Length: 276
Length: 294
Image (cartoon, one colour):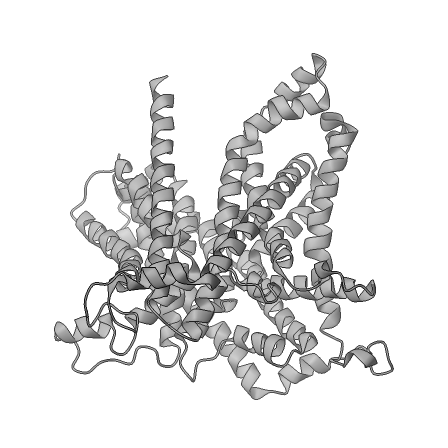
């Protein structure tokens, strides 16, 4: 343990300032949702109101965007979790140049700007449609294309998480099961997957959130559909009203509840492990 | 491949290979090759596609190099993204050091919980928050005026100032977490040894902690630079009339001119920029790709 220094209070102060810097803007934005002023702000304070929440609730376009966001996020999780898990298993059992090349190709989408992913996905599927001479809806921009674009980099997050978990896997278990007459699918279902579940769960959660807050890829691939981020963006650009702040406050509260819930589960699990 | 077959059998191996192949080929490699190919094609009406005019040329790229405005927007995007990266590092480094080596262990989960909240709030809302704060008659000017620090309201959103403020706020956590992970893995005994041997605090940082934190610095820099240069939301919401971002020009080609081919040439330039940045960082910090990604 490091001894206490006389300069430590400076660090404490810095941490407090940084936390304020991170959180105060969110509080200001949330607070503006209750201000009875047509332009969203906390200053000057005109008076308390809940009308922005009422207006938001009545906004059909918002509900539509909300539903679209959830559909896309669920589809992204459903596709990227199997892909990311499979890719991690493949990467884990090969070596040499093939491994480095494959690995580079897999992490490249994380390091690619979202706009590039969006545009290349849009152009590619459009091109496939033209080549096939087909007007089939799958080749036109739309939410399904946003899903494909998002999967291309969210699968990489899942892959990295599962790969990290695979490092702590004891291969001997697999071999023992095979020697004792288990089939390959039994080994997969009863031994490998249970070991990977924590990473798969974390991957699914991260993928879900990443998809909900994605904007860059969605903007280029969405066609005429709205998602929540696109909805907020277009509202801010055109008719800015404090309903956005009401929506922001709801989203922040949801995030907060999710984070606190996760933390409670984590601490309970830790205590259980410590109690063993 | 043989190892895979032995371990998981033919059926499962095929499933793994198909899933991985679909991702790498159909979602990553082919779209990018297609983007590259199309950036050399002219923008033609549908009737002339495949006709005599439909040949490869450098025209789309020449459009960029012949336009002083586009070049200057590109250069400023690079310069200011690099500046944002440096500012993020300066803000995050002391904090990462504090969190990994100084602060009380018991408090860490709570601090991280508080830090995760802004991270999970979507980018569009985070830039919107600053849009409110920085407004001419907004809370920031009001409180500074109230405290007597400034005489007249400051026009915060002018030049690239609003964009820089927004980008730093939005992406500083992408610098903090990799730095924290890197510094945390350093044995505290090494820091104490340096101090016991009489090194002043700045030399301990320069010779012991910073070199150890290299993978974290590389990873954080790559993420912050790439996200900043590729950001669409922050420059649109917080830009003034004389601060344009390269992504806005890409959007113009894609949506206003509907010229997807020139758009893809410009998108490809952005991709090259990020690739160059990643390779420079890997060279300078002597790290591998696997150190940068997580």
